[in-house]
Length: 334
Length: 143
Ligand SMILES: [Zn+2]
Image 1 (cartoon, rainbow over the protein chains, first blue to last red):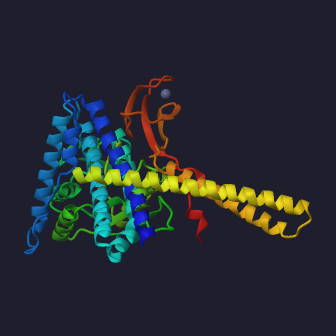
Image 2: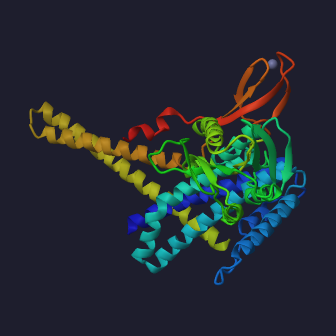
Image 3: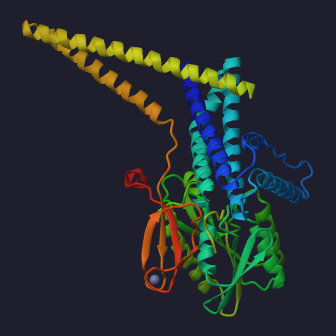
C-alpha cells in the first residue's frame, strides 16, 4: 500500500507540474497576443474553476436542446471572459485562447480529482480507495499529457490531429466560393464528377468545431431533402496496434462531442431517408490533440480519394451530396 | 487554494526526502561494493578462493547503484514538457518552388503568403505537421 501511495504521489506531483505549466502558458499567451491592461492571472485562475452543470435528465424528452442551450451559454460566457482578458485578440485568437484555457481547466480538474483521492486514501487508509486510483493512473496520466500537448498546440494555433476531417473538407473546398452558415461553419458548392457537393467545415483557422449538425440540417432543408448521400469525415480513436493515419469507411454520423450535433444529423437524415457514409482517420488520444502528425496529414490525401470514390460509386451524375469535415479546425484555413 | 498550498508543501517535502534517502542508500551501496572489490583484489593476491565471492558482490553492488542513480536522473528528467518541432511547408503552385521552415505563430494550412520570389504565383502554406522520430513508432513491434 505504501508503494501505491508513493506512486500516486509521484504522479500527483507530475500532474501539478503539468497544470502549473499549462496555467503559465495560458497566461503568457494572453499577455503576448491579448495586450491586457491588468494582470490576467486572477481571471485565469477563476476561469480554471468554472463548472458547467448538465441539465436534469430524469425526464429525458428534449434534453438534447437543454444541453445544447447550456453549452451555448457556456461558450458565450467563455468568449466574453476572453475578450475581457485579451482585448487586443482578434476572432481567430479568441477561439485559440478559448481552447487553450479549456485545456488548462481540464488539467486542473484532473489534478484536483487525483489529489482528492490521494488525500482521501491517506485519511481513511482504505486500500480500495488507493487501489482504484492507482489502477487508473496510467490512463489518467496519458490523458493529462495529451491535454498538455493540446494546450501548447492551441496556444500557438497549430493544427491538431482531431482536425484531420476539417482538413479534408478544406482541401475539397479550396478555391471555391464559401458562404458562412449557422454557428461558425462554412459551406462551399463544389462540382465533383458531375455531381454537386456541398462541402461543410467549421470556419478556420481559429480553434473551433462549429455546429456541423446545424449546418447539415440547414443544407438538407434548403434543398428539400434532395440529397443523394451525406458523407462525414472525422478523426476517430484507434485501438492500440492499429496504424496511426489508417483510413476506414463505415456508416453513421461520424461526430464526437456531447451528442447534440449527432442527434440533429440523425433526425434530419431520418426525415428524408438520406443514406449516410463515414470516412474515419484513425489516431490515438495523444495524437488527436497534439500537433498533427505527418502520418495523419498524409492520410487526409487518402481520405479525399476515398470520398471521391464513394461519390462515384454511391451517386449518379446530377445528384447533390453533402460532405462534412468534422473536427477542430485550428490551424486549418479554407 | 489553501489546501493546494498545503498539498504542494507535502509533495515537495516528500520528493526531497525521498530523493535524499535514495541518494544516501546509493552512496552506501557504492562504498560497500568498492570495499568488496578491494577485498576481492587482496584475497586474490593472497591466493584465497573466497575472493571470487567478493568480486561478485562488488560488481553486483556497483551495477545496482549505477542503475539506481540513472533511475533518479530519469525521474528528474520526467519533470519537463517537451516541445516537438513543427514543420511548415510553403509551395508556389505555379513554379513548384518549395520552402520548408519551422512553424511560426499565425501560420495555418491554406494560408496565402503573398507573391512568390521566383515568379508571379501566390505562395501558399500546404502543410503543417509534426514528425515523430522513427524509434518512437511502435507499430512495427507487434504482429
Ligand atoms: Zn513561383
